[in-house]
Image (cartoon, rainbow, N blue to C red):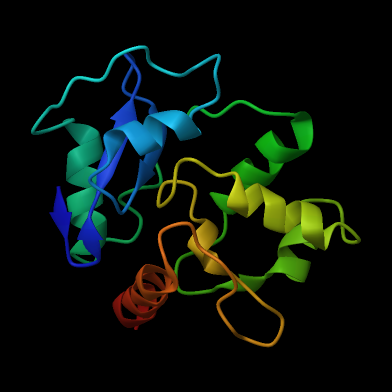
Length: 161
């Protein structure tokens, strides 16, 4: 679907849980981000994914909590799964540093591991890794580009005001 931040694609499983998502129109690239045990063997394009599509549209229109109840399914080791769950609890409009994120995730000395959790997150937006920034206030990295990350942070800041 088209969004103000660019084209957005979501892959969901048969139950409607998000497997991967991001600001791209390349569904095959997204498919490769999904853990092999969850990766779909084939993709079928749909104009609407129901609740998921509505949540993406609502978020981009200013309802920042619309993405919160959407189920996400990602597989990895215990720390990454836990770190992704923590990301879903970081409120919109209140970005935290990688160091703060590591602390909240229970491993204050593991800033690199926290950054790795962001880098390995396949379900962008629904697992809002864009809300993590560097200690000096700069953006850090983002799979979908720093322009999209800046747009998301500005959008959340404006919508929270």
